[in-house]
Length: 122
Image (tube, rainbow, N blue to C red; front, side):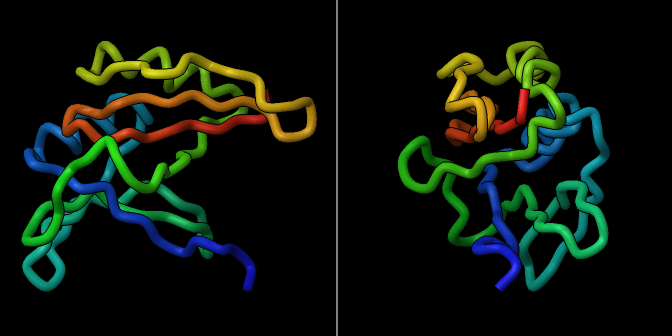
């Protein structure tokens, strides 16, 4: 098993608003699609890399409780974290050092109320 995670889905009550939020924060397009009645917008990933999607449909309910997904914050998570408030989200835990070996983390709430995190080496 190369990775413990191979896919994740972040629920959205308002699909367009959520896609706009992540597009602004990550400065990247999230291509939309519909699969089995579920609207999805896909996070960027290199070939064979772990990815996920913003999703809306039956059974998708945003929550600040439950699993915490860590998105790749790039070389320094300060860059995407600085875009969170301007995109309509809220920083819950500012950039915090985990350790020299592991790097940094930060937690934010997206426009849908989901608690999500960034990780980066610096």
